[in-house]
Amino acid sequence: MLDKPARIAIEAPALDAAPLSAGIKKPDLITVEQAKAMSLGDMTTLFKDHLNPGQLHFMKLLGFNKVKIESAEGMYYTDQNGRKILDFFGGFGSLALGHNHPRIVGARKKFQDENRHEIAIAFMSQYAAALAKNLAAIAPGDLDMVFLGSSGSEAMEAALKVAERAAGPKRSRIVYAENSFHGKTKGVLSVTDGPLYRGEFRLFDNNVKVPFGDIDAIRRAFESDPTIGILLLETIQGGGGINLAPPEFWQEVRALCDKHGVIWIADEVQCGVGRSGRFFAFEYANVVPDVTAVAKSLGGGKTAVGAMIARREIYMKAYGTPKTAMIHAQATFGGIGEACITAIETLNVLYDEDLIENAAVQGEYLLERLAALHAKYPKIIKDVRGQGLMIGLEFQDFSQTLPMVLRPVVAMLDDKLKGSLSGFIGALLLRDYDTLVAFTEYNRNVIRLLPPLTCERQHVDQFVDALDDLLGRGIVRIVKDFVGSQFA
Image (cartoon, rainbow, N blue to C red; front, top):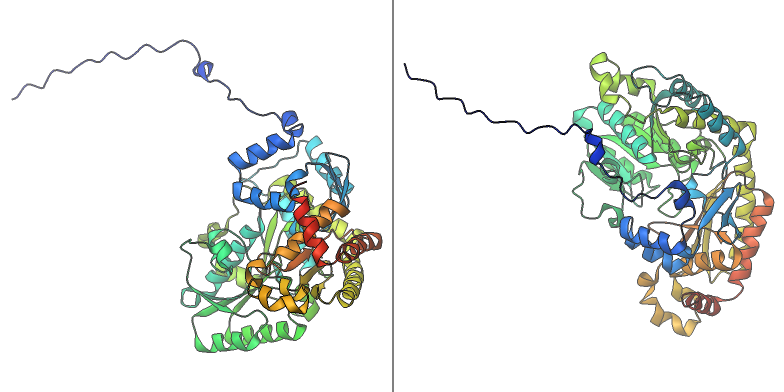
């Protein structure tokens, strides 16, 4: 028998008796109070170094980089100089209740003061259960099964997943619309139109694109491709330039989906939660989709929360067994306590303060006043459209605003100049009239108006009077004033 090789003894290093944490040095971290007191210069440096240098370029172009927001309440921001800024941007539709609504602030403070639980993944949450019940009570028809998440993209991902599982592997192809925007995560990015967001990512290709509002194109797609099992549409296109379809279109959509066994997903992330003058914009057509999603304003302007709501039949087909249930289980922060109670209070405030009806009334008044401006400045304003307090103000191509003799020459540059006029006007509204507006991703000639649903007639008048005064300067002076602001 061979002798075993002698073992080599290695002496272990002596452990330092000092605790391991003794050598961990705290980095040079900014405190909350230091962040609050930060100067514009320091903010700009940190934004450029650690956040988004490209976005900073556009903020500088519009003059938005000169503003430091110190507080916000109701319809207004307050900047570092005490200036009140009327908010017709509305956080891309996230501020149905305005800034720091007292009931929302109060509900959140009470929740914190009572040391209520935020994360209780191992247990059932009374707050998640109550929010899901409230959303089911609001939703029409048998839309009553809820998935809770932290964003619109997450809610839309959940909508696509439940629809794909219910449709089955042989019918996983999705029809979506031109100029659509459904989110920036990879799944919904695959059915978001436009090279701006799609970039050069390798996206899923199980989809078919059709013009928005074209029922014949949808019919042809359904009839020619039996693998299509899902139709995904924003009820009102936001990023596309506030585009609407008539009620008859949605009624035909419902009938076509029923005929061909296609699951219809209505994306209401931006237009939902009362913004259109109904809780869901599809209610104007008296139809019910198979799946929908809401987010943005659901968080009451104080937290990030989104929800997918599906018909029970669809949900149970996808996730109705113990074996499949965990596929659908919420993520760590889905249904987090304070987010849920914020959304619960938001839904109650919407109805207690008649804000959905107010959106319809003030939206109609805003459209009327903007239509009058359209008639007054037809060479500048091309179109006004929208529903409730989700309104698009489209400007003419730059060449059309100029004297006839200059139009042929400038028209060749119209594509490159798209968005310039809306940018000039948006920048000057902020600089000279203390008013903030939004823009759209695809039709850059459109200014997007999404004020809080707490908007009153006086706020509409303040905005429209400011716009009227600005447009009254004429194009030449508007351009000159904007260029001058870049060197101020």
